[in-house]
Image (cartoon, rainbow, N blue to C red; front, top):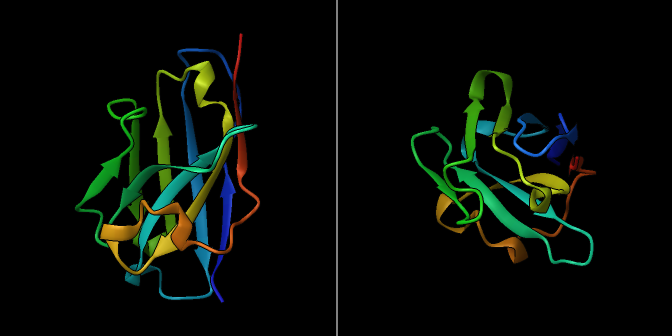
Length: 124
């Protein structure tokens, strides 16, 4: 069974940057599109960014487009989320997940299991 471990979160000032990592193990990483998601207190979990297995296609939510960049290193079974120009509303626990199909990687309801996530707090 696949395991996902997110890391790289922390406390950052508004306008700052962070790079999140998600380490995948227990399966064939190259077979999966990967998605980043976040859950803020009192809100539903939402899609943030997705990338196909080859890294040639990406998608973003409108709220993070032009500020966040998703990438992957298939040799290291890792997907990254580079976050820039962070805002207080980006504060959330960030999660990653794997989907066999890039077209559906943004659909939160497809995923039944989640890792522990990594906390991102944007505050002055």
